[in-house]
Image (cartoon, rainbow, N blue to C red; front, top):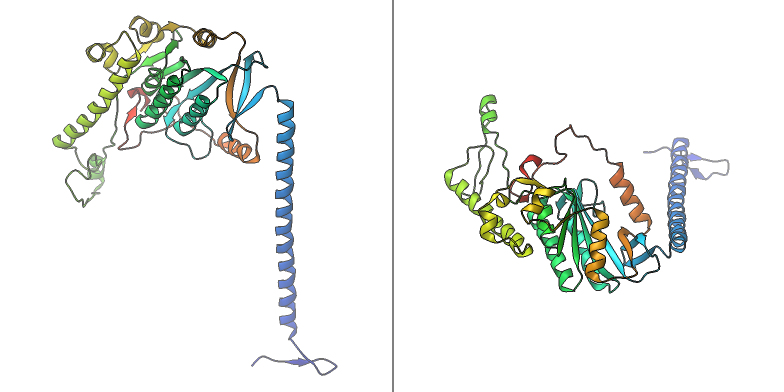
Length: 362
């Protein structure tokens, strides 16, 4: 039984240790409540400030930006700011993937097909966008992601919007696949391009496991279910099946190039150096009919002006609209530390996925 105490008036009271504990509990609850109120207050203040700053930024750049849907803005680059007709530059930088979890569209390492396709689809609905320049600096990437961007470009062209590819340092494999969907291709004389082909990788570690006395047991529903397993050698039947898969995707790649380049046929590509997976300089690509012109960013702009028959125009890029969420996402993507050895790619090919990539990117 717990002890009870009576005060001077004869009333029952709690023991002193209990009273002390209850007092501490009340104090802690008070601090917790105050913390919650402070957090809510700060959240409201930050939200108000971000809205206010966004409103101010919008007023200050009213002549330089225009909404592109709910998520994006046009960011003025050059030309006549008040011009209604627009040339839109869309960047394809780094490895092409289907989606990114947090960072926006093009970064130095990756481009998300989700956002590029969304931007191109929105541009197709905007009557002020008269031409689009696809600025490519990419070694390629996932097969499906590259094809999605290619299809979005074709959709834009069906909307009678000319699309010009402008190649930077690198426009190989999936980067060239995307360029082949454009009306016109301009390459830098020293651009690395080509690498028409498909690659799938599988890491084999069974010999190392045997040396250290480790083995793997796989239980499958069919003999091909653990195809490309690294714990054992690959059988001839497996290699044949994978090669057939690779060849089917390669046929699609060659067909895309043949349809996009009037001087090239499927047979010519497959029976020449164009289709054996090698890379070319921009000057070589021009001689082979893989590009239309050697030039730079300004040349792509002038070609867009000519193809769209523009007189007064402005050149714009796309950026996310100003908001606290986008600000935090940008900070997250730029705060990540990237550590890579010289000459070593900062990514790896995922097993089982098909890639439009040069072999030197492994």
